[in-house]
Amino acid sequence: MKRAILLSALLLSQFGTSQLLTTNGQKIINDKGENIQLRGLGLGGWMLQEGYMLKTADFAGPQYKIKEKIAELVSEDGMNDFYKAYLKNGITKQDIDFLAKAGFNSIRLPMHYNLYTLPIEKEPVKGQNTWLEEGFKMTDDLLKWCADNKIYLILDLHAAPGGQGNDVNISDNDKSKPSLWESEENQKKTIALWKKLAERYKNEPWIGGYDLINEPNINFTGKNPNGTDEMSNAPLWKLQKDITEAIRQVDKKHIIIIEGNGWGNNYNGLIPLWDNNMVFSFHKYWNYNNDETLKFALELREKHNIPIWLGETGENSNVWFTELIRLLDKHNIGYAFWPMKKIDNIAGITNVKITPEYQKLLDYWKNGGEKPSRDFAYKALMKIADNYKFSNVEVKNDVIDAMFRQTKEESTKPFKNHQAPGRIFASEYDLGRMGSAYSDKDYMNLWVSDPEKRSDWNSGQQMRNDGVDIYLCNDKITNQYYVGKTETGEWLQYTITGKTDKDYTFNIRYSGSKDSKIKIEDASGKQLATATLASTGGNENWKTTSVKGVHLKKGENKIRVIFENDGTNLNYFEVQ
Image 1 (cartoon, rainbow, N blue to C red):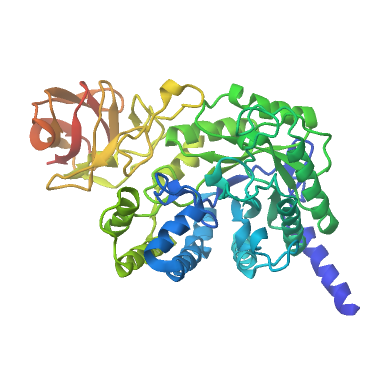
Image 2 (image 1 turned 60 degrees about the vertical axis):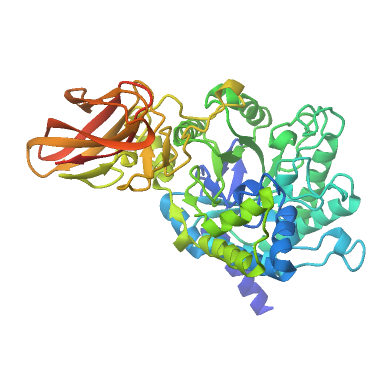
């Protein structure tokens, strides 16, 4: 009895000094009553892979199909070895330490139910639930790393039993089996899983909330297969209410987060709210960043007097990220960007590097031909799993800068410590907002708002996530990249530290299929030099031209290279 009293006192003490989140009207607050704007990242690609994250989208979108492809090459045992290493390396304490240091205060964990319980068709006893320790242990570890860093962990059921919609990639559902909505057993398993999770984490102050069902997308009565035209959404509201009731049997404290149909945004037919500690989630991709695109969510918040949270967003340019966060800050809306890691990723905070061997597997899966040996395929897969370690990923400092510093200030920062004399690669222009560090005419993807504005922003998909188009370079001297697809009036700014106050010669390494000109100015607009660039006969034919008398002062200089014609490719300039 004495032990029980001491334990209760400890738990009360924990919550008394913790940062436990609850709702208060339209705000999320901590236990001190302070407003908390969740600035988060979704760990997409860890417990659940979509094909595009592993570059298999053309032939294997949902995870079960990816597993089939891998098993075909390395057997079931080999596939299990790969996933064991992949899950071990995918998220570690190093990752969470890094996220906290970058400035994030929350994590959204996209959970795959099959790490926590068996599919209904594999249950030894029909209607019963077998619990798997793997998923719970992964969650326990993640929660500890979050608590150590004082950041919140939001649990998100990303792949529900049977799958919650017709977009099979996001929920890993097999259309040959009954979906979540077609199977009472799957619904009961979903409810039981949430109750099990809530029971386990009910006294954990750094659990930020329970995001019940990610992006439902299903036509109950409407014509659109993804539920965007549903008017009642009755089965969706009933299931989320049933889940809430099961959670509340064991956990009265944590926030419940619900999502609408149509990938999270269709709240038609919403029944009277069934809980007093609830948040509406919405998702936002590929549209303008203005009040109009938030109108439906702001109206929901106002009508029901509960908070809203942008539970998933991303997959766009740095310009779009900065604009969006400034808009959300204005309206006191928290967010979680997507995803944490994927292969060949410029639009996230880390990039997993592809290997030539893995590319051979992708080519075989897509095009056929000679089948790679089991040994070759196994080594290629295990190397990719190893590349998911935080120590092996490429941190994208330009994305982090856009999400944090650039949302508050217009100033620029050097991408690298450039010295004069010295060589400056074109792709290493300053960090900063568009219009401050560079200017580009195609700088974000807005295809949902305007199909004519579908864009890769960085057409070369290399190195950086700004509007600047960066490509792989084959020149004999290179940092691997060049700036290309330039248009008249675009420019790049570089911060250069001069050792002395003097005139320098700029040797410009460039290519292009037609004659062109560039101007060199300082940041105030004072012209320092002009250069005529004669055609090199093609993008891959590199030449050097020189301009003399470019004056740099001792100390910091901010200079701009301005393109006066379309089609100039720039590798580097040597300051002598």
